Length: 292
Image (cartoon, rainbow, N blue to C red; front, top):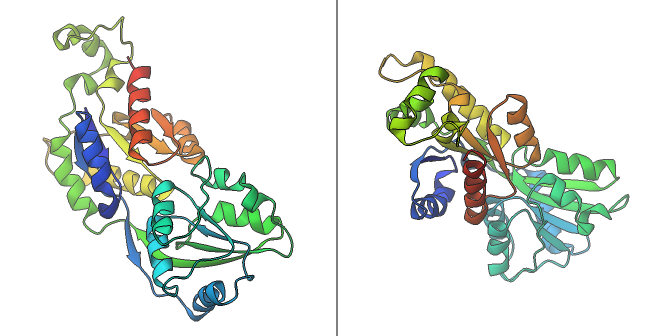
């Protein structure tokens, strides 16, 4: 089975290796890249207040390993905060724990999961938190806290964008998909030809789906970039490349809102709760178990 790993280059390798170890054919197609941005004077003041005035903030929320590394680099060596430190996932938490910080993680790695944490949902008027994030990230959480009267200061350490080479890499990837003919022929022909592929239509009424490549979609931005790349197929002059559509693929989707978006588009997907390799493999297993 083909698995398309769309994680940023710097985060892709552990997942690629884990899926290869499970016997999957992995194609890498980063849909996002993270680039550092220079923070402004106001954000610099937020950071200085964080380590110079221990009671300024009741919590620090760190949304990614990149934000953790950049934020730590802007702290004095050996600094350990007094406030609650919340990391969205284990990888982020590990970066902070190596620096000697005590870190809390939500059960569900999402905005909704963080909103259930007592370190955040008990805060109200008069409280203030700091967020280390990428530009535009975690707006749902920020809005929730502000509606509860919490002051929110945010530092965007980096921005997410579609990699400049993504369209070129996508065109190079397409011939490697090798979609089975069963996934491209009309249903009536598919069913007639299943025996030669050792698949029983009675045992597997959704045989088409079982042979589709599987794409990991980790965010709404990543899905937008995927849709733009899919739309670019029409511009490819190579007639040997089929005119793939969104529903020629299965998807692993991170979180409820993203999964709801794909369900509304009637795309076949399985929701995963985090991007750890074990959870991604659970999603792969669940998807193809459902199709068996």
